[in-house]
Length: 469
Image 1 (cartoon, rainbow, N blue to C red):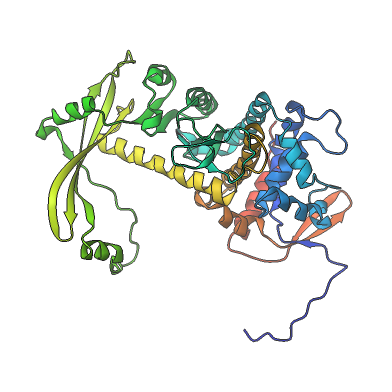
Image 2 (image 1 turned 180 degrees about the vertical axis):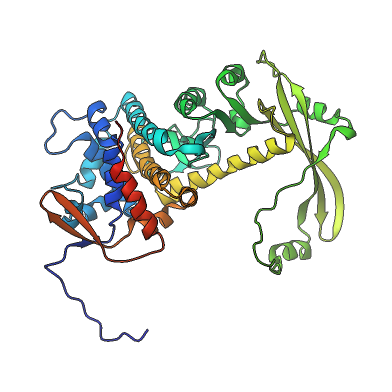
């Protein structure tokens, strides 16, 4: 790096931005009819001077899609005349106005916004989901949205000792989309109010999928709903290891257990590498910490009818044989049971356990919502306004998934669906472009190259031709 004689000059002739990919996203929003639906259905402004509801919803979402982390970052885009030219806008709402807009939302207005987003989502599914949704998996979980604020209405002190909110997240495993995001007080149970949102998710996905399967941990094993859910969908839920179920597991004959063979996490395509020294394990042994090691796993299944159900379901039992060690000494062996109740009679017990474990991938979606999109920053003053902001912020994540589904190369699309949000910004959004307004056109002249450029341009052609008619 030999450059020493460096100087900066301001150019008055070239109008450029570093986030040229936002043009493709904005065109997609227009083509799927999202902006139009927001203006038609979401009635929060009495006078549209100069902004419409879609401006207030898309401005924070685009702020996150262009690398912003908080509402205040909208000011950077608002003061960038070239960015405004790139979107064909004279101005966009400032951060204070955006925050005030979220406080206009009532509970029904948030329902309307999520319904509008889901209507546009289905336009993408109809034409671009393809085989992705043949067998859809809906995952449900709650998470903690902490805050250091002291004046945020609706926040509470939860069981972990953290002040904040407790959002419920319903996501689609196939595409990593957030179907519903529901803000709740911080001290509610993880499953609180989830049944109605699960019902909505089934209705949303079922017309586009050959089969729908619900997945959740033990908190979402609401047996009073099993019979109703089984009429329209399948499910795989964890069950608490209560004494009654443990007694049933102990009564299973040894001949009925099958050894569980886990699939390799990675397939070695060249030559296996030498494993590095496990430093943590060495310290645990040296200092004689208690160390629980897995020695073997066994699975079986039995028929089981919960007390609040009229139907009987498969109960898959996973038995883990554990060894409790201290230093190099084995203290004793331990057996622990894990239970999964399911309607998927077509799967073997091992496949049920594998599918249940795949639900853990939702933790990656939640992590991206928290620290990639920054949807859980709770920047405004009460539960409803922060709920509205979470839904708008989650839209930025969904736009990434929709763009991936638009890609002609299905394999590249699957890679992008799994891509972290910041990686998506670096590869697709942060494209330096010269902006030229000519006649009735806005021209984005690309000024750099990256390995995703060819796929970006192919996807742009798909978006340009996309029609909801």
